[in-house]
Length: 382
Ligand SMILES: NC(=O)C1=CN([C@@H]2O[C@H](COP(=O)(O)OP(=O)(O)OC[C@H]3O[C@@H](n4cnc5c(N)ncnc54)[C@H](OP(=O)(O)O)[C@@H]3O)[C@@H](O)[C@H]2O)C=CC1
Ligand SMILES: CC1=C(/C=C/C(C)=C/C=C/C(C)=C/C=O)C(C)(C)CCC1
Image 1 (spheres, rainbow, N blue to C red):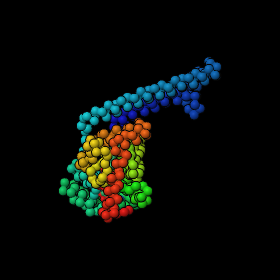
Image 2: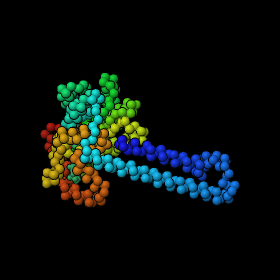
Image 3: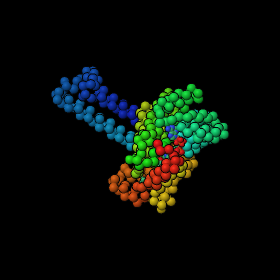
Image 4: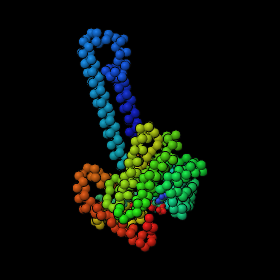
């Protein structure tokens, strides 16, 4: 990202300079009056040549200039593009330089959950002070206790991320009681775990509110302070199911595709505003063994090749990406393949690979699991 920004600055200034020359001296566009000024100090073209010929000459020079600008811009873009690809390849094999976050204030949502707790402990190990948000007070407090044992300051808040006012209220409280958040980890997530037609509307809505809408409110609450200092980091924990989809998790896929789109648009906005001190990282893991998708499985033989991820491994890989200021990470890297084939192959070809790998019905045992737990009263029906 850094590389891109530093490369694009000279490119745009070259373009601006060339454009200025072209428009101020040569442009036949009546809006650009500078050509008239230029010609009034010299012998006007129209005095020595016929008006038609003069106009044609001006048009020709202006056209040639525009073409030259496009060619120069294209070459500069190709240099940018090649540089980005080469540096991405090099970074894949080399250990990236990790930033120091000692003493920074990091807010983690869903901190009472499996990945949220591990994120909290990893950030604490790096010396970051923590603000932990979760709707599950007991689980959140437990994470806070564990993190305090690592010697950092921890503040735990009970927040319902499905409610906008709950987010804004808690954000005001954090600013007043703790200070300015410089790292935001949007980790909390839910899934309905029911077939669309069997699922209460509120449960479907909740997935969108927690996994997607909350990202708007969290960013609106904490980005202004980051912008004021041009410094900060926003992490979006999305999912591989935000890059490609499967059956029977419509709510989850819609929310995670939304999260991916949100992250990308926000990243473009920060770059467009030259706020390159604010970093963003998108985390897209495959199934993680946390219980959230208990039962979800693909074809046995393929499952041995791509087993569910260990929660600690998932968080450690994510931390490397965050501290290395990487813009996106798929865990494992193999997940880039279905992401690419989704876009490149015809729909039916994707369906065939899904069927072969058991990706088409992988959620059915998970949904059965949720049904069983619901009927046994282990989880609430809505
Ligand atoms: N597990 C997996 O296979 C994968 C998970 N992910 C993503 O990783 C993230 C973490 O997942 P994981 O740790 O497995 O999930 P968990 O269910 O273990 O943790 C999620 C946490 O978020 C809390 N939470 C749920 N709803 C709200 C709410 N409205 N307000 C505040 N907190 C809430 C949960 O509380 P409570 O326990 O009370 O519900 C829980 O503590 C999620 O975004 C998930 O989508 C991505 C890829 C794979
Ligand atoms: C669809 C599909 C696959 C299975 C993906 C699965 C099972 C993803 C589960 C992700 C989860 C649970 C994410 C949670 O956030 C394969 C076999 C990789 C490749 C073929 C297409």
